Amino acid sequence: MTRRPTIHDVAKAAGVSVATVSKAVNGRYGVADETVQRVLAEVERLGYASSLVASSMRSRRTGVIGVLVPDFEPFSAEVLKGVGAGLNDSLYDVVAYAGVRHHASAGWERRSLQRLSGTLIDAAILVTPTVLTAAVEIPVVAVDPHTGHGDMPTVESDSFGGALQATRYLIELGHRRIGFLAGRPDLRSAQLREAGYRQALADAGIPFHPRLMEVGRYDPDAAAEAAHRLLACPTPPTAVFAANDISALAVLDVAADLGLTVPGDLSVVGFDDVPEASRRVPALTTIRQPMHRLGMVAAQLVTAIIDGETPEHPRVQLPTRLVPRATTAPPGR
Image (cartoon, rainbow, N blue to C red; front, side, top):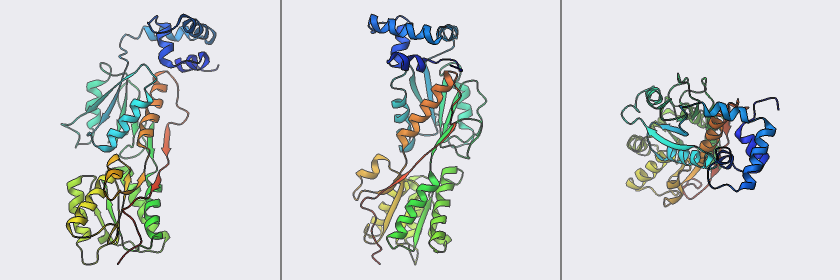
């Protein structure tokens, strides 16, 4: 091997889990003698013993990875589940932390990292961070960063491509007056979803009408107010693409209040595919982004960095796909 062997290399060579390797080399209970001997043989063959000695001398290791979120809402909750699944076969525990007093302000994660790093956590996964750099000594990975790539590894979904799919789908159904309920202007993924919406209209030769776009900021109350402005205007849209599912569900509520039927009078498409999307009646057509997978990939990246590896792909973009359900149909008016 040209690189330093890791615990994952030992686990693969011995045909066991990472957790089993750790138990075997540390003399913990729950591992058969035959397995222990096989693991130790691979440790010696791969030259991993020196790594184990170095690791044992690091007295500040906590065995905990922190997942820092601005708020516990459906998207971050699903990402957190993915992180847990990604670390299920590891020695790491997960702590979820929301800086609730500061989450509305830029740089909230810096304060949280300074509070947690070096004492409570060995590494951090930041969900929708506002900063591009993290001035801490622990490994940090970002999920869906606000303003794009900085000096930390990132994992995100194809927001532009997903928005393109959603808007093209509505156009293929025959809609021409398609409203867009935008997300937070400061969030890069929200900007990309608006760009995808505009690109699909341009590709179809449909002019962009500013009055058919409102900003919901991914907030249920703001989205409801924005949806009311869209649907109550003199020439309302026959379809609305919302930049996330929470906003799309707000559109459905407003449509019901205004006496509009879905999808008879109005088609609605969301983005995310949170659990509430399929439970709603009618079930929401949406763009599915792999939220669990985002968390799992982030967990894989951060544990690789902890083990001293350099990620082969530090900028990961995962595909999105359309999930047609009951809130979309050809225009009825």
